[in-house]
Image (cartoon, rainbow, N blue to C red):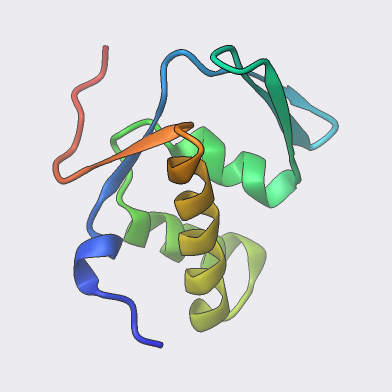
Length: 102
């Protein structure tokens, strides 16, 4: 399946209410709205750390391919699935333009 170019051009940004901590190569997220914890593996934490509204999804893909020495097609599907889950759970928002640092 081909990914629409618009999805790769979006800027993921963490929901500010989500609390998180890095641990053991991964990360743990807490959604205070429902009290649920989510554990991320090293790759999930790598992506989560970059969800600051300044990095395009496509740039995340390029970094994963380079840093994890994986194939672009597989990484693209995995990244988009991960971001879709985070968005569906309200953990991130997807923006059409780069957010200014705060």
